[in-house]
Amino acid sequence: MPLLDMKDISRIYQVGTQEVRALDRVSLAVPEGQFLALIGASGSGKTTLLSLLGCLDQPDEGTYTIAGQAVQSLDAKALAKVRNKRIGFVFQAFNLLPRLRADENVALPLRYGGVPEAERLKRAREMLERVGLGDRVDHTPNELSGGQSQRVAIARALVTDPAMILADEPTGNLDSKSGQEILDLFRALHAEGRTLVMVTHDDDVAATAQRRVRLADGQIISDEETD
Image (tube, rainbow, N blue to C red; front, side, top):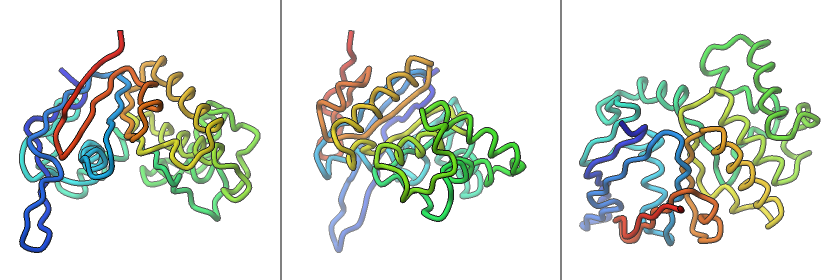
């Protein structure tokens, strides 16, 4: 059974009097432990698909299961629990809180999950060590480089030990050296058995992944795996 399984998913928006299908009957199955890149130009549907995979949005048609659990019928509270326990998010803009230290930013998902402060800070610092920032635990975001900020965001995504990591253009705001370091970290996480789904418009970034799914006009137009 795939970890993620979408069947005939559509997401439809009403723009004035016009119906726009951001996704049009898309089916996608992702096995546990796979590193998948979603590729496409702006407007192709890749970010909409990532939002649905991450339970940040709901489809208008079709079915979606995570580890066999149907999620499209869950209420807001249940969806929030799925996101907190099963999914780690990494965004292009990092989304760190500027007044919090690195370890406090990483610990936020554990705070929402009710973990006591001492335990969540301990786990946050372990994750910062894991991403090579053990010497930056007490730094705020404005004291970190872009690459370091994205590593903090990845540590935050990992701290709940989620079933999968979803990354939206994770190298988009980084210079080439920092971007390569983040991709190397993703490769290492994949080698550990993590499931990763990464959105990108860049074919060179997508080449890092084990599988590449290309979208255009809300549909999958190609799906290929490396040997």
